Length: 411
Length: 149
Ligand SMILES: Cc1ncc(COP(=O)(O)O)c(C=O)c1O
Image (cartoon, rainbow over all chains, first blue to last red; front, top):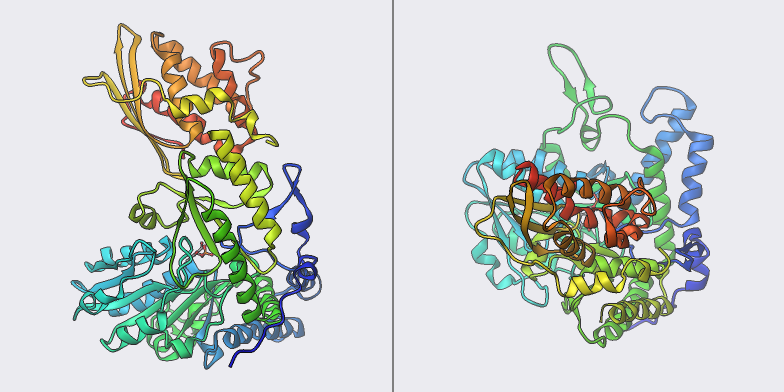
């Protein structure tokens, strides 16, 4: 059965984003860079501003009504993240600075606990540095090795090799749900099932997935799932780690300080239960509340409608860009989300980025913190356009004419 | 920069397409590698310096048009110059693209290299233009590596 989705009212949505009506280098801004950081709707900005003006204090601090109110708002935001990810309990949601800190937490706490000398950590070939470097640091410390799940030329993981890549020594498998360079949506549910069948825990980097598709961590059966608020219409400085409660309870704390302790004495210190055990110090309270407001906003729009709009836009952009002579799209996976990376013959991505910038078109040019992906495709860098629910076909057309202008200039 | 043509002038585009003094001098007296970690631009510079004069210089590597054209024009500009003068040019070039020196009056040694003055309006690209000069400076000082960070 198919239900017809009511399309998004993009014109109305755009009014929620003040930045979209500014100019850049004298041209209307065309923001095609949501994979770097999403824009925040006014509802989020105003919610944070309200907190700072009327509610600001600290959380989990004593008996004042003000602190209790702030704590309630902060914990409500955690509950929103729980519901958004489909977790069983809010105790499974740990606040972090973002996906990077969440992945480091897993490596430093869970990783240190389960990885020993001679063990293996298996990562996909399309990981962001945030899901590579923490594991390399751990591997170096423990004398463990890192193995890589390869990908094909379309940018899809080659899963035929998975069963051989997982060995007796594999302890952890790390995989990105959606590639930030190639847009590939990885079949994480299948990967997790196959890893679990061999007793391997799976850490999913969801930074690029949560803005585009509905995630249900229980359906996926992920052990850990990490994301950043700022790619999800929320502020910077906040993100979350979902972890199965049994894991979080078994894991040692990774940073010490206030809020994470039950009692401290010179003789013996005891810790709070999860998630507080992993949240030392004063958190970014306004940012957490703002992220809660961002989740309300995208859920009111509807993740299925967002996905439908973005898919349509990606298909349109792919068609128009693929028709440009000398332009090559990187990442042609069957299942793809909202990201279009490309290179143009004879024009370095940074030059292309500068020329697009002069046309008001904001894209990312560079290695996208995924240098092994650049190496795999034999390019020093790419230019990447990424689409959000507020983007339009007209904006894609402007991107295309700006690329054509660059080609003309460099001819 | 509202018009990219201000920066991507014909000279720069042309040197990007056909870089001069491209390659490697073997043997050489001075050598350094330049690296721009932010964008991955890489450059290898080899020089033959005799009697305090840059007799010959070549570069190779890959990078954006600003980087390649800057390297190409630099090799042309410093070839045959005393080392002290090449160093002074590097100083003036850096000052100009960072906006500290006015190319109209304060960079007399640069000659046609003032065509890179537009880079100062593109802070994100200053490092691309400066990388060859930073590498030259490192090579002349006897350092193996230069980085724009
Ligand atoms: C796939 C992926 N993982 C992790 C990150 C890191 O996110 P953050 O810098 O917000 O911690 C990013 C951000 O670029 C990403 O795209």
